[in-house]
Length: 314
Image (tube, rainbow, N blue to C red; front, side):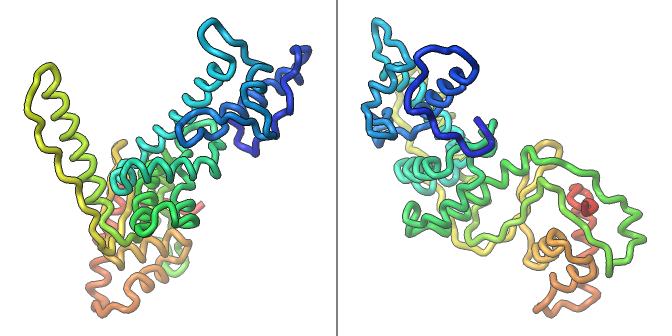
């Protein structure tokens, strides 16, 4: 799919393919038919965008066979395309799915994709605007919009952590010799910082553990009639002010809880503030003695550098 706005499809399919322009017109028409959202019953829409019967439009470029009409054959492509998109977001958002329940989750995702169609050649980017959509369209998740937004933000950062670029870590000598009043640092592109209102890290971990337990139970029951074991109780999403760093290490995704000052310091560095200013901002409003502040900062930087989070600013 194109990374830019999709051109409007032609009104009719070319009667024959005489040149590449005709081929392009046919491709645009078929693509527009495949990309159209499904009905509430997960079938192809019966009317085309101009009101004509979809069966008539499909017959212009799709041949029937001895079992299926042109409409039915085109519907297969339309449904497969949409089911693949829906499955992709489901795979990326197990916590949001568990929290909202299947029915509300699918309604949310279908509404999201209807207004935020895929613009990328890769499904990796499909959910990149989901959190923004939840914030802009709260009726889909009300009265739990804040919790749903926390989950969507958290689960998207795991995609970011998985495959975003890595830059060379900052040399130790730079930290030792640079002027902290002028030194500006950056975080690795795969590191995301989150300030959340719910303990989403504990919740998503519990959801994944529950799902593994359900799969294990199903696997053990194959081939025999056994009394159904009670399903594990769904986890509870606790309200809690949580600061997180989502990152990767040795090709594994991790999320680390941060203290409020630690989060502030990383946010300030990420925003481009000088190191000295960032350190001051981190402890503003606290009553920790300067010596203890310095010890905290040293401990944090030791850990961050071990993780490889700190790099030079471009």
